[in-house]
Amino acid sequence: MKSKSWSKIILSLLVVSLVFLAAGCSNSSKTNGVKKIQNRGTLIVGTSADFAPFEFPIVQNGQKKIVGYDILLAQKIAKNLGVKLKIENVEFSSLISELKDQKIDMILSGLSITKQRKKSISFSEPYYTTKNVLLVRKADKNKYSSISQLAKKSIGVQQGSTQQAVATKKLKKSDLVVESVVTSLATELKDNKLDGVLVESGVAEGYVSKYPDQYAIASVKMPIEKESQSYSAGIAKNNQALVKRVNQVISKLKQNGTNKKMLDQAKQLQKKYSK
Ligand code: ARG
Image (cartoon, rainbow, N blue to C red; front, side, top):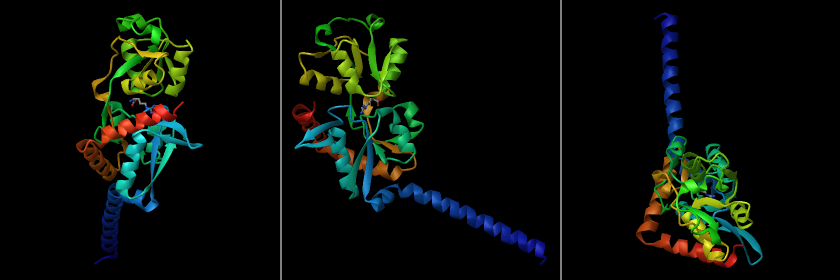
């Protein structure tokens, strides 16, 4: 055989083995998303701790920490993986890019499933269902009978949230007040700087039950996109192994009713310790 054909054979063998190698690599990064976390020994969960009873800071025995339903869920997942848990407090609108940049393994932050988000991240099975309400000052509880009356009012939403999206679309307000944390929106409402905050019912109820003289949920019905009614864990697209594990944990919690107990526990903490 001529040396030219030898080199052809060697070249094609090389190409074939390179293809196999590449396939092997991408495969292992797919299946080893959980292993990677286990080797590190820590699950890193990103959350935006401005959203009681799901995630919020408290001071307990002189120590500051982030607690809430999502944190209890994070603990269960870490336990299932046999690793420690680290909570990163990140602005809500940065959570998805932090996940894509692999700075966190998972988002647990009252994160709603949306078509748009599905393009860039994966979601676990839903673990909580909610709806949108307008949080107002107590005196304004029955002030509005339709959302058209909100046209000239100053309405606040969290940056990057599904509330921002639905308000932009359905309330058609040019002067929507968009801020990075829900807690400051609630303070501004109380201080008469806003007329309402579009937020999810569980969070609004927290404000009303903690400060019944200040806040109320407006009787006017607020719009919500159907898909965004469920909270799920947000996980990187290439980590289906983690999605599977999280789904196992969630379905167990739903089956044995632990999820309800977790919510009660989070609400207790909110009543007792949060400001
Ligand atoms: N469910 C809404 C969304 O996914 C709002 C979530 C806000 N979460 C938070 N921790 N502030 O956009």
